[in-house]
Image (cartoon, rainbow, N blue to C red):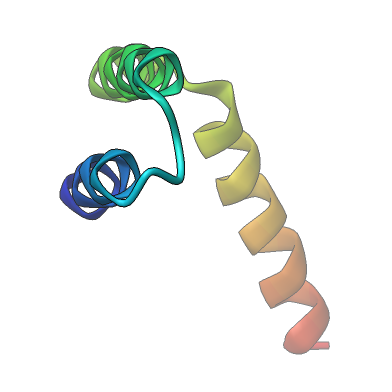
Length: 60
C-alpha cells in the first residue's frame, strides 16, 4: 500500500490527476485497507482460490 500511496501523491504533483481524483483515490485506498485488515476483501479470497487452481494445473 505504501507504493500505491507514493504513486497517488506523485500523480497529483505531476498533474496526472486533479485534486478531486486524488481525494477519490485516497478514499479508495482507505476503504481497501480497512477491508483487507478485517479480512473482508473478497478478491483476496478469490485470488487464493485461483492460485490453488493454477498450482494444481501446473502439478498435473
